Image (cartoon, rainbow, N blue to C red; front, side):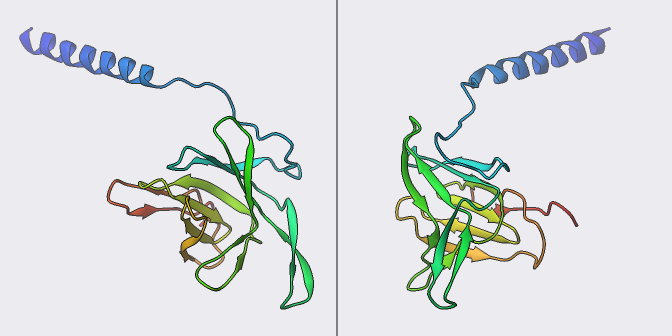
Length: 167
């Protein structure tokens, strides 16, 4: 009987803890960036940077840039930066890792922030780490060529985890 009472007490404490844990956050609203056309594919990533700005990106291309090397216009998958109130602050079409340019031409697979508040951007088979203050590319990796990346996440040690949509 004593074991049963102890087990029941433990279960009740776990249930109460989970109930209380659920009250520590509150859903306020869906963030819908105003005036941005997503091409009918919707938003595929929203993240909050360390400065409190909201980064968002749709799945498909929403703009274009001129490729001076190949003399053609290419569709780009923009990263949009908004104030916390929803005002558009900046639009990124090209990342700059050092002195080179990296045009964002791949479909978005996810957007998140790392343990330091920088942005993790998954686009097709690439994973970018972007400095949220300077908007410069920190890292770019291709975990698996041709593999559709999921939204990446990090732990408190800075280790990055990502998966594939299909394997």
